[in-house]
Length: 84
Image 1: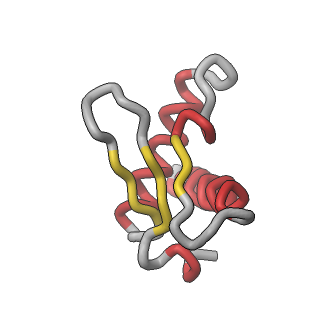
Image 2 (image 1 turned 90 degrees about the horizontal axis):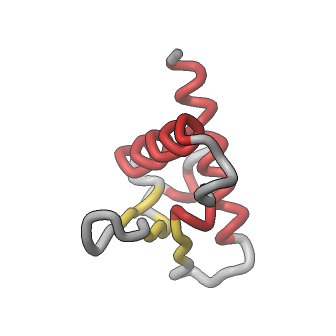
């Protein structure tokens, strides 16, 4: 189970890294862009959301949600470049 969680977090980090690759230092993306509704199952979306929270806890990513049910903004955290 723990190995799968680590793999999910590593995958999420790589997906976000690709989204930021051509953007500037202050790049930002949305959770709905990375995990589009209707294209992934609820279980997959929940796993990716958990991975997002793991990366937030590790300070790899910063996340913000202006209000309940609003899209989640994702940006680089202080440890973004140190996560492999």
